[in-house]
Image 1 (cartoon, rainbow over the protein chains, first blue to last red):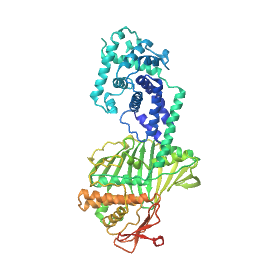
Image 2 (tube, chains in turn blue, brown):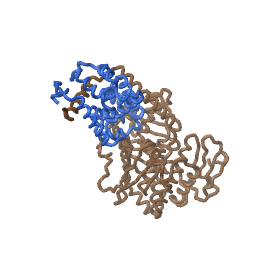
Image 3 (cartoon, each protein chain N blue to C red):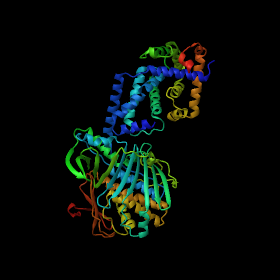
Image 4 (cartoon, rainbow over the protein chains, first blue to last red):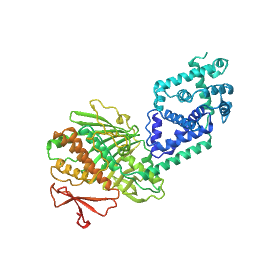
Length: 189
Length: 431
């Protein structure tokens, strides 16, 4: 966190290298989060650009209360929410989700099989966006529930409920499927 | 049925796999970085164009420490109030340490002459430890007051990242600490003079039209130095750097009628982080002192909390009255540049306290005193003013002590020793 603060401080004082460092450090995590939330690579890239443009413009006024990663993850989530709102999409059509999951990915780097990944993606796509967002911010970006609550301006209990209901739904949808999966990495975990 | 833990592990694995596959491309990186850094430049240009003299609204709830803290903020605001127009960079090596050093130790002198106020900054990252010395006590007639003020020490720890200031005041056995919120426009005003220089240099280095003059060489404190002068709107910056190391050894800023010299500069020296700790040290009592600055001040300020915005001629007159009546026992000051004001705030605070005035009345007077100075400072932007009160006694109806001309106005206004105000012809102004 201190390193990030120093990078921001240097950027404010004119170091573009510091900004590039921040970008390189978080770009892939944030892009992954944006894709996971939007199921749309193009929208995810747009969100990534919007967030870093905004960071560059607002760096002078930014007062970090959490880690920079949490802050940027929240920005991504908010941006994707805006994009989805504009498109008036509550959930992504399943065909689209399936198609996008393979778009731009590199299958040979996946530990999970494409089928497993698609099934989870399918299950995630069924969740209301609020629940999906909390699950990804917590499990993907490592944000604490309290941080999520503060960033979304909702009660901690609301966040916990969304998380719990989301997991319940996923469990219900994936019931029985997991046992049949023999993904080595999961069994090691 | 899967349990929640399994589902969580599954989703984490899914996220990891998704992350592994979510990679930006070089083209995307280039596109985003170009867009972001261009936006940054545009933002800086816009901010620069829109920047106006800072308007302050400070609400306070205490006595001496508050006055001192407010004075520091006000002074910093006055010093950093304007900006430079820009330049080419033939002095890149000289400005490099200014821009990049993480720790800097420096002294800066505000004003001129042997009694000029000295501030001492230890800068570590975004925190500053600031002390002051050479407070002018010669005008204080009461020896007890003079002795007491001479024994007062004040240290400020500024955390620019979190926009907070810890003020530590030690007066004999009394040790008081206070936290102040310095968010909003106040934050910029409380930055170090080094930041001010950095801002100027940053603007200059990317501006091919900047007016930079090579001053040649001279010897400073036994070192051969090369100098550069950067001219801006209403101000100028001179940097003298060691000829061998390129490290700046003396920086001079002229800002309206105020001059500041930065000296004894050391870059990237090892320093203990504890020097800029925001924790209240042992032996200090924490007092509730609040300073709001315009951006963050609540809308419903109580009436007795004064607004420092929209300063007027009447405020200037009140400021001069307080200066003569309370601080200098019937005489007008020799000069009224910001450094003089800064020094007198301490004296005013102590004198008001010794008069036994109610706290609310003290605050009102302190604000009136500050507001007049804000009016003068705003005249630096396109207006004119001059001071001729040295040696004049309060009540002297014949002598003009201060004159000014508002920006865009052809009329001159003069304030006389009896504090009446009248329009005067240019030829009747004090020389």
